[in-house]
Length: 320
Image 1: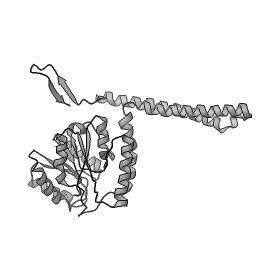
Image 2: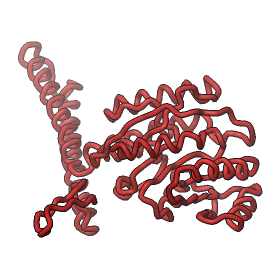
Image 3: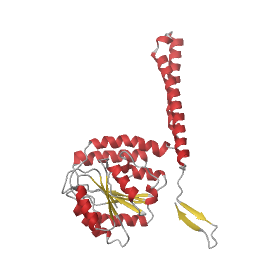
Image 4: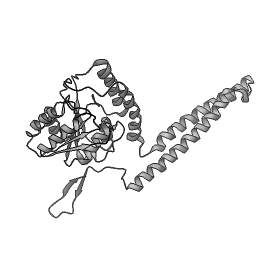
């Protein structure tokens, strides 16, 4: 379990009690990692008290408020389990849904995303912008989920190991996981009204998410072949330039228009220069990508399973 907190002093103890009750029923070892994302209230003091009284609990305190993605990344780096569950610390996610999420992983899924089908938030400031953003993300990425913003999700650890988190990218983990071939499913989860503390999110967050969507789309489709997207833009610019030049020439022949006074001729030259710039940017991006992969030894593929027939007792399988 990885749970980030930011100024949630009224929810810390109650959530911890709920979590331990639910996790103790799973019949499997577990750990809880709480991340204090630069709280200015007594959140850390309450977490400190909890970790002193309970086993299998760790607390990470960040120096300032870095944001939810950074807090989840800090918790993930400290986690040791093969299954990772993320959830919010405001008690609106219901810990009672955790066993069902984990069970879906056991059935073969790599990512199980919670869907707040009956979301208990304000319509115009939270639910409506979220619905629009979710549909846009699904349409753009091709990964159809109802609720990207729900933090309550369960993951296989090997999937998360292939993903770097930054910005507001935590909500896009299913998209990035899909890129490496993960099996993704969604299930409805209970969403409770906030009973203590106050929400830290507003409508402005929606715009930041939409900006990050551009980055995610590029990473998911063109991260290993950026010349394709820049080449496409260059090709469109060249076509537009040729069209403008052809019309300018036609006007010169048929109507006697002066080419040097024709804005279409200027547009043709501009589009030709733009096409050249797109190609150069694509080449620079290709160099950057190759430097990244070669310097880190990072492969451009992800292996799901290996079979080894060299074992004298028969083939063995291993998951990477």
